Length: 260
Ligand SMILES: [Fe+2]
Image 1: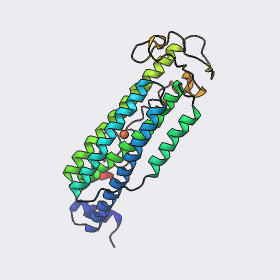
Image 2: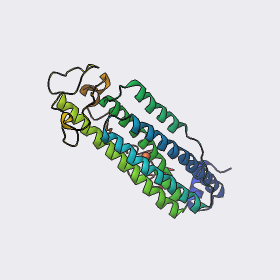
Image 3: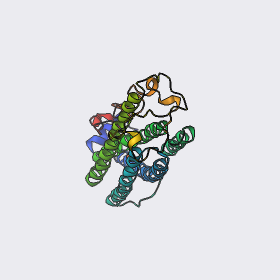
Image 4: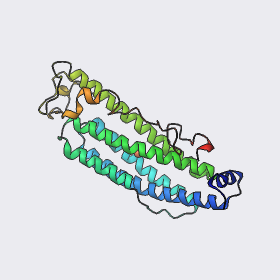
């Protein structure tokens, strides 16, 4: 019986059918799980868009919801290119992340910036999961010579990375905005805090001047500058930080084929 190392070496020499079949099975299973996860993400993005406070966050979610529908169609093309039926698998991770987003909604006040901050965190957790997933799928497709599948999956991977970047920018714009509005005596955030009249939206419009200023922007304690304005929470910059895992990370590669 060959050792794992021997099997890997044989695989890269092209003469280990067992490993090749195993990887193919793994690839198809991961595709099916991702197919399920994308469909769940589409539903979750709709819920999150409905719950969002600001147009900026709502539109970001709706835009990615549309993009995700294309990603589902792209996965169907991948299945087709492999001659495999498109079937949904399962994904506990996306189920849990969707539940986490629902918990954010239930724990935050409607029409609050805290709600949007929490939703961005929840959305970025999904994006990071998807980046890891698609990065790995691209690598598996390349390793097995599924060039069409690799090309399609890489398109989605780039969209997921782009979404993550946009969410970071959006979050940072809120943090900056918040810091601006807290420049007075808002050292501690009270739950009944209302936005000061000089607060400016990310697009430069003062909230009191915009059409949506019937809203009261309240904050919970979790959105204080001391807890969330440091660049490590909302708008996480940890995107792509994985360097040792299989295909995850910002370069969407395996770190060379030695990573298997
Ligand atoms: Fe996504």
